[in-house]
Length: 388
Ligand code: FEO
Image (cartoon, rainbow, N blue to C red; front, side):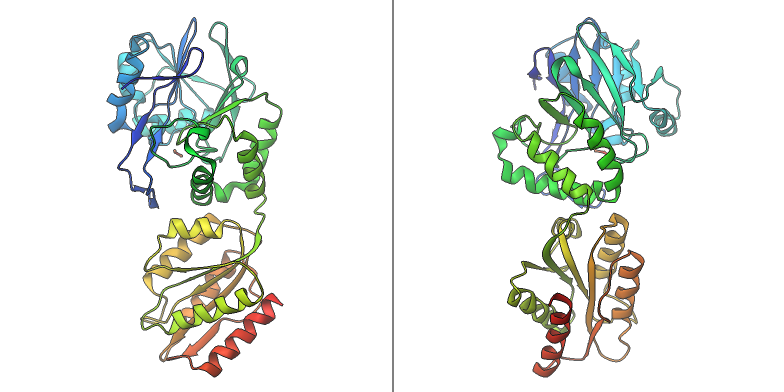
């Protein structure tokens, strides 16, 4: 396994996790990479590491370029262990290496490793000269952890923003133009929807900082490196950071005996009648992290569940918890569901959507037992009121 030179004297030395299918609850059907970058100058810097079980792969790639004991700086842009999980192993080999991180990075790494390392704390505007180049640092708090920061190398117009602009894609290609914009765009959207969405205000601030930098390559810590679609991905991040929605609907539901499903499809008919793009997602068949990709830019979010044991189905409950945590803004919510005798599920859905600050223009739509044509027509008329 070899390093790949991405700029003169700068190498990708990361690891490819082809088999990763679950990233703390996010379904990573395309696997992922943990990208680490080796900068060779008078001093040698390693920017980020990899998950602990991929340390040997990173080490082999580093060894294809230099003796790893010669590394002077290990930059930890982010404490989360998919990027910092190999710092201790690396520091055991590069015994004189200084660990460069943000103030919160130091706190986090100490708590994770229960050990004091040779830390150098940096803040926005700080710079470390390594010869012909300098490593410049930009704190990016809450994009997506308090410790997150980016490293910028102005001499190479190279921006290393860690998780920001990432995508969970395992591939033998390293660059966006080698892999194809359409596929990367989808995974970048899924990544944003599931990891970055709660932090729009912080992303907007980071984008402002980025706009003043001269950049011709963005090398994130997951997935493909951006060199041909930098403008495209920045434009998308601007849109997502604003929670800008399309006139689009997502109908998310689960069903016991198809009554709630019939309601879901009746709701879909109205959106289609109004020429509003609409996706139906049955939670028995769709992973919540994929549903979130659909939610990312959709104005109307309709959530349905029959009543089971005086509440919502567990799949719907899990989705609502996840949705609320990811905190999409400026959305219209509609609750619906069938019931036999209690009917509590609809109110439960409404309560969660309300607490997630969704606008609920109509009261939750309920049908007892199996909806007939008249009840479905009434339901459609209520939806028509919302999207008129
Ligand atoms: Fe890729 Fe927040 O770790």
